Amino acid sequence: MRVVDVRCHVLLDPGFDPSATSSAQDTIVVEVITDEGLVGIGETDLNAWVARACIQAPGTHTMDLGLQQMLIGSDPLDPEARWRELYRGSAMSGRRGAVVHALGALDIALWDICGQARGVPCWKLWGDAAHDVLTPYASLQPEVSSLDEYRESIQVWARRAVAAGFTAVKLEATFSGPYRHRGIDAPDEAIADVVAAVRREVGPEVVIMVDVQYAFDTVDRALETAQRLAEHDVFFLEAPLWPDDLDAYAQLSRRSPVPIASGEWLSSEYEHRDLMDLGGVAVDQPDVGRVGGLTPALRICALAGERNRLVVPHAWKTGISVSVAAQLAAITPHMPFFEFLPDDLCESALRKELVDDGISFRDGRLELPDRPGLGLVLDRDALARFAEAAEAVSRDRAGAPR
Ligand SMILES: [Mg+2]
Image (spheres, rainbow, N blue to C red):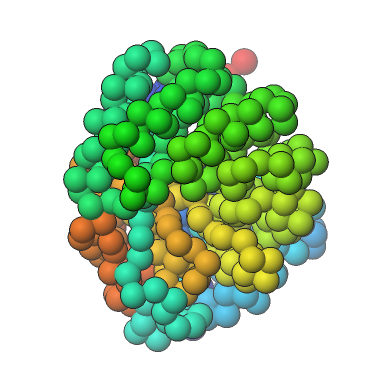
């Protein structure tokens, strides 16, 4: 079998809000086409236009080859070999960041082809089931602009999530720092107050995770919040510090009474190894596309297992990323939860309309994926609509030539 073509679809939710901080408003979807009629689908969490450029850019020398250029003509049934070639062949531009994120979409599509070729869901290519059912958690981020509205709204959202069967929720409680959502500005004490209110709402059994999205500029601020959160039985505190400062993560991880989680922005297994070994995090959070696809994500899960760390992946795109995370969860015993939103708790049209991911959510649990490959069916009408919206924005924003 050979790869004969790679198609890149840059997609945008026509109702996107430029003031929101959500990467679920646009996406890149790749289709890797084979000469035997199988088509693999992949996605990654990177500016979709940048991702397309990373894939389609040609190269002119042996250490700076184009990703698509290297993939076409190769055997799709050996994704690990393809990953090594693409990673090494693009090394002068890549190794980390955007090029590795883009490589992730292609690697995911290759694994999809492998699963389809064997007639099994991807996870069965890697091992035995580690869980009978998968446990998703709901990320809750009220679209409001003041702390009072936030407190009220997050309690309503938490109640809805629990009513839908969720046993775990994550509060996006970001009231300072670069990720501050819709202008909410509140003192650090507000984080624990909001968590206490949600804890009263949902009772002692529900798992609560807290994501502050890089809110703190010092270890001391992060530690004070962690100490306050410890009173409310929090499963982890996510992204308290800027991801480049592994020394600060190490200091915090050593002293925090609450497990520290991070890793959503990192690329490659090497950055995740450093986050665990130098940053000391208890919970590693790879985003499968951004790390470079399922090939490095599987190695990251193995590294975490060897170090007795948990893996709770980041997945904030369409049903493609959800299916990908579910495949990984199926075989990873130290992955207790993964990020998932059912349609009625989510605001992204891309998430709701682009693909049928075949994942059935019932009573707060997901069945193990059972369709061949990633089991994805793209809605071509929705794809065309989202592609048109992206095209219109790129015409608008590209600006007139100077
Ligand atoms: Mg996060």
